[in-house]
Length: 302
Length: 213
Image 1 (spheres, rainbow over the protein chains, first blue to last red):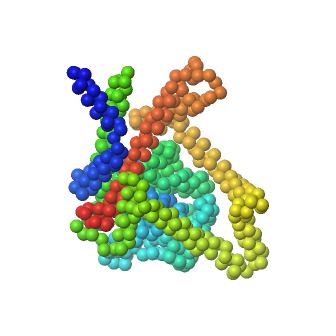
Image 2: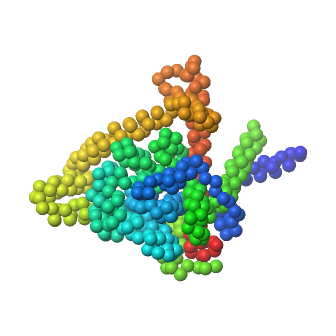
Image 3: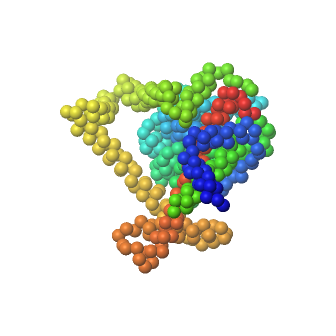
């Protein structure tokens, strides 16, 4: 190797380290966009915490309700909204009573959007009144109120006291579903879908005091913080990030294909997995290249 | 290609692109979108709080409560809450300590005993190795790793003794567990950020442009 070759190579690694970050943005943009337009098939393999949550909802007593707490805001919609949609589909497909509330003010619209989408899907395929999903009979959207502590403790004695009116302005006492959904005793499992520490509050206030079964769906950023609670059994199961959502969507899709038939529903989590895989490979390549550049430049300097 | 005809989808798409334009450089479109977001979010929060909290929990009960004492009680609580605004009047700003004291007292009283149970006792219980863990080799292995990880990590944060003897290798092992934890958190963070970007592209390419089949 001549001195000139060495200098050229050194120059290359130096340039790589000083690359304009906008080129990296462009590469990530393309790496994410292309698999969305031309996806390669990936079937998510459910992990143990996802399977446990799915199995619990699937097999819990028929008279117990599924309660979903929308505890996130629109900035984490991409990761968490597919979880809410998949859980609602699961709840309605297994004919559970479903209660939805929000512990984040900005989660109100997201909860309503998910309910509107999933009830429309089920009602479009309903042949009889029995098959349809009706507000106030099969599900209730309590809405949002504050503070969390009062809501979580208050729901243990009487839910209608905490939410005298639902999101749509109906008096909750008059709703037929509320005759079977008085307090935590009627709740099979409560799932907090959150991008913050709210699932931990559900443990502290609803589980410690009233023994409610809990599950959670969390952003990937906070997943590592919640694994200890899954390990200890305080959470029956957990969905972590968009990958967790995709795994749950797959389980629900398989179940619905077996019982309800093929509806051709859009699963945003599964749809995203090819992009996610490609992006992860690209980022791994960036990390490896960056480290090689760093060590190559360092060796040259010394 | 099946472009959306919903004007709200167009508004959301244009605002998304305006925010993404920051990736190139700061510009007026980004600023407009940012300020719109802050303004709308605050307006939404104030409206919802008024209709979902203040009206049903304070204003309506004060107007309709049959007992005078209930009304007095509600008004007294409202006055204590309103003392938060004394922060804006320097002469009486010390009054803010009253609602803060009430809030702290209530939260600590309700929270601390339950937090000890949920976050200390139950977590300690989960590190105890029992006979049932040895029913399968993998559960036994994980139980041992968790046990060792907890002991080693706690020993790393044992600052009141010099790191020598048994404490030295244990704290080294603790550092390894901590680094693995950081690595897992970093990996999950990358996944989360990519997911958020995918979500926006799903909206732009799917809901807006109709390119995703």
